Image (cartoon, rainbow, N blue to C red):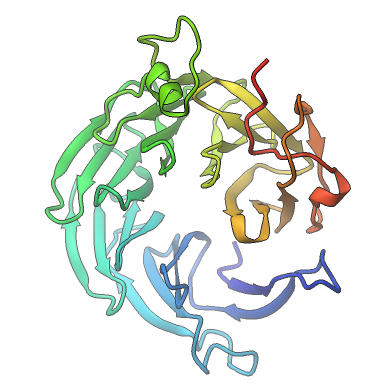
Length: 334
């Protein structure tokens, strides 16, 4: 909420628990609520309360430790009326959504507005994510719906209907070829690329598994929470990771409706969850305490523990400290 975007050096072998500040980017007015990297990691786009999208360069001489704070802002994209709540990338296009109920598609190389969808929803749009495989993107809203859009035409190609309250988060799960939604009705659901409910039997069959009696049952998991504060998909396993209202983070096999892991230690709700497969880490960020890091790795045990606690002070929870634990691998079938 201090309007500053900060870039950090990743831990070294000598200091595996230390994330040191590399540079800070100033320019936003109000809270920074969302961000996304270009696919080549040359630029970071951020947005928030001020209704402005800013593009920060990460790969040239200006973006260095000697540069003045804020000098790395190369692009500014203005057009939303009010807070921007979500960003995603699809090819070289940047897609933004906000409380003005509009969707805007920008050329990330030039900052030029390419397409606008006015009144995309009947209420505030909370989130957006892209499906590169289908050249589509999806939005979700307080109106309880999700919509799927063609990037090329900016036309509606599918609708997600079934939640009984506002849909706060949406993510594309490439491993399952499905959309995942989180709603204020305390449920998580999965959907086909066109928005039709994904049946449990179809998902399990695609994984080479099956559960008797699952034919015709849509994937729907209700959790004991007042809402979901964050949603992420572990790309290699397809596990669904969510932040709950009690400040915990849970890892789920959504198709089987199974808890794989529960993490506790945050003092406030988790606002963002990011998977970094290259570093074998799960990064969670909360509102008050800046960073807490957990790690997945190792071989899946016969039965996974129901709860793990990690420090909420910016430390790493390393697989070597808990050997054999892989929080994002499904528990083995009995």
